[in-house]
Length: 169
Image (cartoon, rainbow, N blue to C red):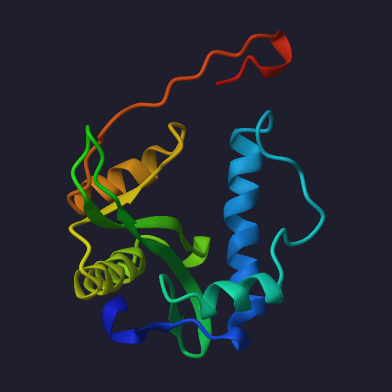
C-alpha cells in the first residue's frame, strides 16, 4: 500500500503534544548538530504543551500532523499573515511555514508532500496568495524537497562571523 493511503493528515490537537515535542526535538537536534554556533544543546524539549495550546487556539495558526497506524510521524505548522501596503510594497496575504518535520524512519515516503499539500490548501482557503518558508543553507535535502514542490529562492540572507568562535557559517 502506498504511504499516502496509510497516512492520515489532520489538524493537531493538544493530546498530540508528546509526539509533536518528539518531532521538534528531532529537528532541533539536526539544527544543533549542523549549526552549533547558533543553536544550543538542550536537555529535553524546548517547547511545552502550554505553548502548543496557545498556538493551536490562535485563529491564524495551523498545525497539521501526519498519523500512521495511530503514531504521529510528521508535522507542519504555519501562520497566516496580511502584509499591509506601503509606499514600496503591495498589500498581500501569505502563509509562512515555520516547521516541517517527518521522523527519520518515515522520510522519503511522501509524507512531507502530503503535509505541505494540506497546508497549501488551507492557505488558499484563507486567502493567501503565497506560501513562504526559510531553509538553512546546510539542508540540501530540504532545499531539493521544496524545489520539487515548486518553491524557489526569493533572496539570500548572508552572514559574516566577526570572531573565530563563530567562524562556521
